[in-house]
Image (cartoon, rainbow, N blue to C red; front, side):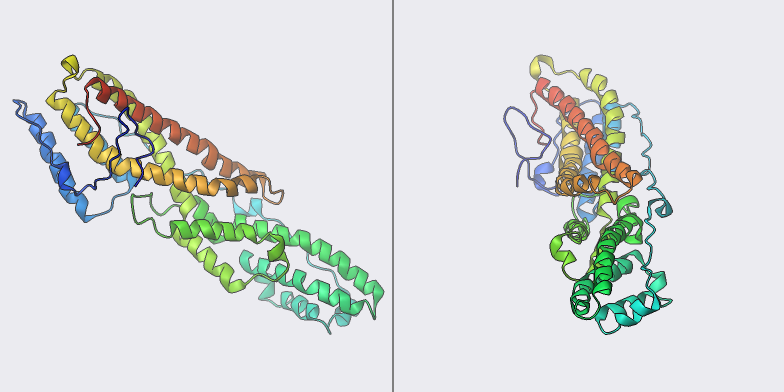
Length: 373
């Protein structure tokens, strides 16, 4: 297992113990201050209870602040974490797709090829109320049957064959619009991008990697290979269900926003408090040791691994978001939302993590302490 991403010292320690390891037993030494013993007891209790459940990063941040406050005997600010900004209404993002205008002669002329059946499907009441995913499937069917029908008509009706060629070009543009409608207005995508069910945790991040694969699957629907044949309706619905279940982008962005909101004020308040902790001639006091243990047990063991997951998922999804920023079919409001979360939000989170770790590096270096508890 590689070293944690954020914490590095001159000795390049690598810490892989689990929260429930016996190596986490805390020995604070003798002291006349009862608050130190209280801090040790609270930490020991946390180690034991940590073996029985999986907390999100917000739970870990709350515990982290609480333990630091107890040891330092000072209240610490608990900042409010805002929800993700609302994604623009689907009605503002939706492309209006004009249907094909076919006269009766043309309609009867194409009945002998599969195109006639596909066009007829759209004229049913069910066809007129399709979900974005099924509309995309329909548009892909049209594209897949145009060429064969055009070829068959070349021998009997040259003018109609030319009309079909024009229709195919128009429907290729409609397919792109239908794809954009799927991305911007489908229930699964909107919830996946904007409504997290929970924040990320060290483990048990349901369907995270599968969700990344599903998002890239949707992007691949624009590839030349995908356009050569109709979209598999069953496969498309399966991938959308995975995105809905995991809601990874929304969970990822809300997690990074939480860390970006909580850590900067905590860093600002801890910096002067840690500066007051005595480490005469580089020898750590009992309070310094307990603070080191709090940092290790909560930040290194619980919060930093979530930060590594944020980085991991972010870098896996970045090529997709960058590609979508260049897609002319996607609405500027949708692109602005993606940029705000995947670029600006990640930048704020990264700076918050780096500043917090830098503060601890200075304190631990001054007291000749390693981060390990």
